[in-house]
Image (cartoon, rainbow, N blue to C red; front, side, top):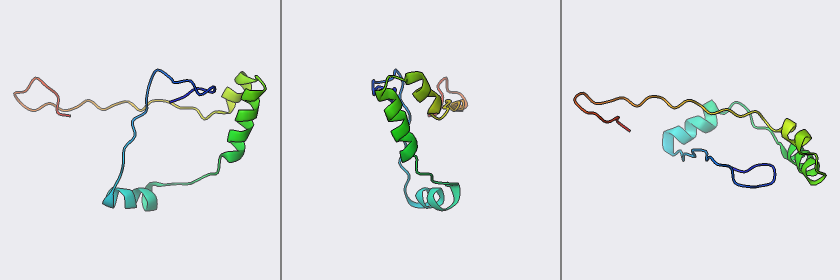
Length: 82
């Protein structure tokens, strides 16, 4: 993960690879839309180059973490199943 100046952020995103049925369903059923954001990226880049970081940041999509589910435990165990 990077900020507007391509500096590393103190967190990372989880990236998963899909194969087989999951890949097919993701492509055919779960993808709602695909949008070309090249013009937006160019606009943000130009704002950053001109020192208008606040304006550039306002154009970024809002992101929020998805809460991680609580891992179940196995009966008799003191550790979560992961």
